[in-house]
Image 1 (spheres, rainbow, N blue to C red):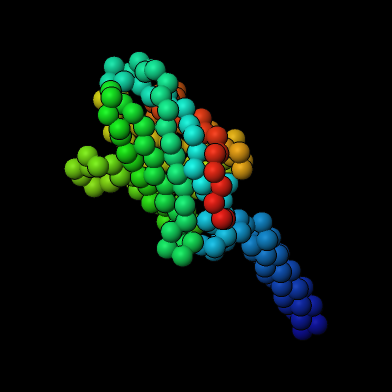
Image 2: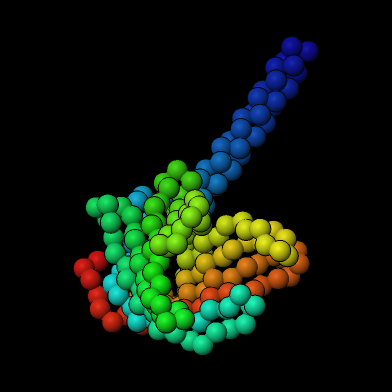
Length: 196
C-alpha cells in the first residue's frame, strides 16, 4: 500500500515538474519573440534618412475641405541634444505670407515610443503631441482628436523613406465609421545631406 502511494506521489511530482517546465518554456518563448527594446541611440536612427534639407510639394485642404493648389515647401531635419532627439522645421507660402512650423521629437525608452510636439508662431494653447514610431517601412504617429464628426484619430505617416526623400500624409481616421480623410500631403526630395 505504501509503495503504491509513493509511486502515485512520484508520478504527481513528475507531472507537476513537467507543467512548470512547459510554463518556463512558454515564458522563454514570449521573451524570444518580444519586440526588441530600443535605446535612444538606436531609435534616432529611424530618422537618419530624413536628416538634411528637402524641397517639397505640399497639398492641403482649405477650411471647406477642398484641396488647394500645390505649393512649395522646404523641410529641414537635424539631430539635437547630442543626437538624442530630432528637430524638424519647415516653411511655405500661404496667401502671400510665409508660414513656419517646427516639431521636437523625443524618444521614450520606457514606453518605446516617440513623442512629437508641433509648434507654430501662432500657437495659443498647449502644443499638439502625437505618439508612435516605426511600423514596417513607415513611421506612424497618432493622437485622439475631437472633430464636428465626433472623435477621430489624427495620423501622421511617413512612407517611401530613403536617402533621396520621402512621402508624408496627415489624415483623420475612424475605423468604426469607416472614415479615412487625408488633410495634408507632402512629397519631398532631398537637396542637401548633412552628417548623419
